[in-house]
Length: 89
Image 1 (spheres, one colour):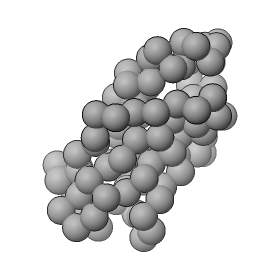
Image 2 (tube, helix red, strand yellow; image 1 turned 30 degrees about the horizontal axis):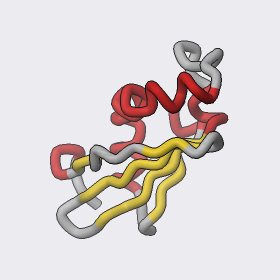
Image 3 (cartoon, rainbow, N blue to C red; image 1 turned 180 degrees about the vertical axis):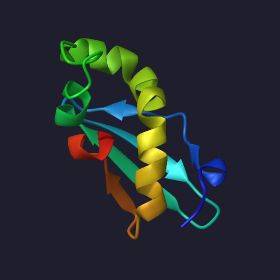
């Protein structure tokens, strides 16, 4: 699809208690990226965060997962991407 330099993430990062949602913008399209709680919990640094802390730190979590999101976006064929724990391996 595209290399990582042409992917921008919008500043509006949402957390609904079950997943973080952020929009990625490429030269061709806008892609909805979701990061489920299971993915967040799979990272040792975030494993013990409660919902309130995830909501507070959601932008930092997206920044930490940015390389994995960019890699998954590089393979994306739809307008929605879900970052799963196995994508972090």
